Amino acid sequence: MSPYSCCVNLPFPSEGHARIALRSVAADKEPRKSGVKREMEVEGCTLTVTVSSSELRVLRVSLGSLLELLKLSCDTIHMFDNQPEREREREGEREEGRVRERERERE
Image (cartoon, one colour):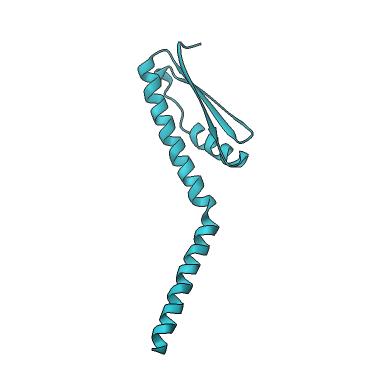
C-alpha cells in the first residue's frame, strides 16, 4: 500500500446518479508513470473513491483533477436531470409573454 492515500465519499440523490459519475470518472485513467492508484465503487447512493500515491504532491494533483472531473460530472447530471423542470419554466415564461402581448393588443 502507498504511504499516502485519501478516501472521498460522495452522496448522490440516487444510485443511478452515482453510477453515472463513476463511469464518467473511470474513463479518465491515471498515467501509468504517475504511480497513482485509484479505486472506485458505488454502494447505494454513495460513490467512494480512494486515491493512493507514494508521493504526497502527486496525490494532491491527482485529487485536484479527480474533484474537477467529479464536479463537471455532477453539474452535467444536474443539468440534464432537471431538463423537464427547465422546459416547464420556459413554457411558463413563453405563456407569460403571450399574455402580456394579448394585453397590449387590447389597449
